[in-house]
Length: 54
Image: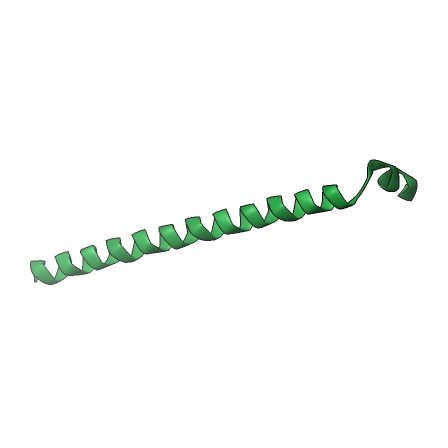
């Protein structure tokens, strides 16, 4: 009985670790995408164009 519980705890720990790794990779991907798109936006727009819109 204790062996089954130990296997379950080990399985839960592995699954939790994998979920943390996947979530971290996803956040890094989204962050880099946000930075890249923001950089492209600022490179494509000049401050004069933005001031004329107001």
